[in-house]
Image (tube, rainbow, N blue to C red; front, side, top):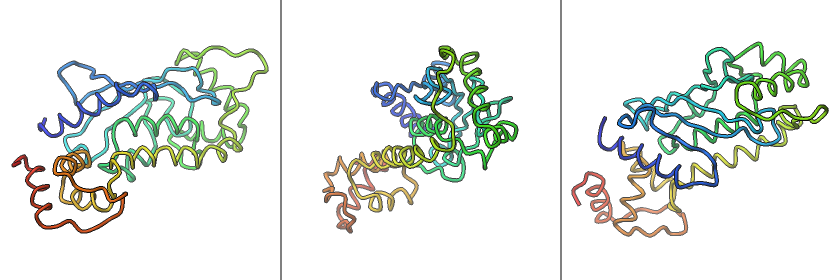
Length: 245
């Protein structure tokens, strides 16, 4: 594994451990292998998955962060965008919409959000999607039963609804969850202009490295506005990125 990739993954794991608020965790499957991880998060509230603990197998490709991590659920769950047989996931954040700005943490947050906002019209599991579209109440019943059986969720009293995964709840939560993912993505820029940082990202550097170089050189954040850097600063940043300063 390249030293840059190893440093980034190690930093991402450390950042996740430092963030106790999100209640997301990641650990290497083997202590000396940062390319194979195991993620964990709780089922989101007001969904059939509430109270369950969900484990995700994570494999880091050699091209990371320019290619997304390969993730699949270890915990069985009843969800239209997750295979009920293999745990394979249908999520654009882990495929066409992946960006080097994203992290293992933001990917796991996206998975957690997916449990709140299923997309039955773009399914990984057609049987589950069909049930959600035709009979949302039956879908909730089966999803909750699986959460109790496979994810350790507590049983609810008879007549107590989970409150999620209906058409109404999907519409209500969709925008909120998208905003949360976008906020996490932009936080990686530490207040600098996204366009300014991305000009270096387009040269093949990852966002955390560019931001660290900017902060080391002392580049003004200019309240997040884009602007042209002086040539001397460009040289200092580039030298820092290439470990020459």
